[in-house]
Image 1 (cartoon, rainbow, N blue to C red):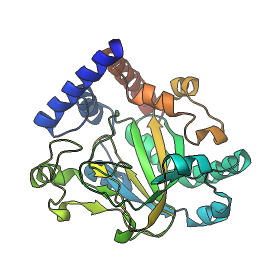
Image 2 (cartoon, rainbow, N blue to C red; image 1 turned 120 degrees about the vertical axis):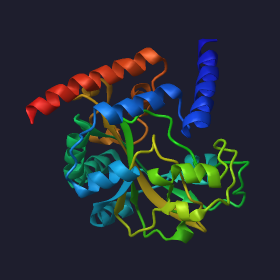
Image 3 (spheres, one colour; image 1 turned 135 degrees about the vertical axis):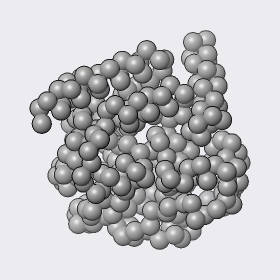
Length: 304
């Protein structure tokens, strides 16, 4: 009964946010993200990449992981039971030993970006989940059915949740790249696409408002998935990519919640605690997270 009531109130709250604020997340998350931007993030941004991320909600990072991908590409494999269960989207897997080595080189390559994000968020930043996968073409690509987040949406999480998408292959428009609506285009997007909800909008709105994440293998796109509208494109054949979830939270609390071993950073080991932390139920939990971040900011700034 309690879970059912939460779903109802959450749906009403999200509808209110959509109608009033053009945001498809619960109202408490809208308030949290507003206060987060106002009181927690750094006001002085000197780094160009971070400034673009701040202003647009996304940025293509000045790093490339193609060599790291090539070193492990022959070690990725599919599981037959997953192919049978969900043939339109299949996860890549590695052995535990290969996961450990792969995560180590990914962390090393992304470490400079994570440090810049820590200065921006005034808090510790962690790679919490890594999910490499392939999506295939689907014939029925209308508004009535969604296969792999291929309808415009925001991730219903707090701003402490962000993503890095990494191309595991060269991605052109025919390969169904990630579609992103930059912050500056949000109001025009809602009007042009007559956006009412995830399964209720005009699919043929003004495409000039959409940024498509085409690029070479190994290119990385950092984006605030809780703040900007986005969707997966549908490829003509298939697209291989890797999604990295990064969580911003004080280290002493984070380490008590999450698996830290490299092989368990791979999906889905940390998924439940990612949801528990970054997708909280109840206003009290939202406030508690915000207060912890405020306290961390004070110590973080003083330590600089």
